[in-house]
Length: 87
Image (cartoon, rainbow, N blue to C red; front, side, top):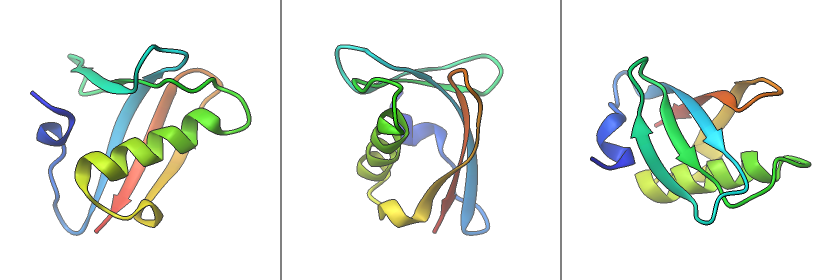
C-alpha cells in the first residue's frame, strides 16, 4: 500500500503519527507499523528544520494538497512527530 492509502479524511482535518528516518537514500513511505505509526524515509539531515520541511513537502506532494495546510504540531528530539492536515 502507498502512503495516501493510510490517510483518511474526516471532518476536514487529520492527525498522523509519523516516524521519520532521516539521512536515507531516498524520500519514501516505508510502512504502517502495528501501532498506527507511519514510517517515512527522508533524504534530508535532521538539522535546522530541513527534515521537517522535507516531510511537509512529501506529504503535500503525495496527498496533492497545499503545504500551508500541513503543520507539525508536536515533535520530539527523536524521530516521532504528530502532523496535522487541514482540508
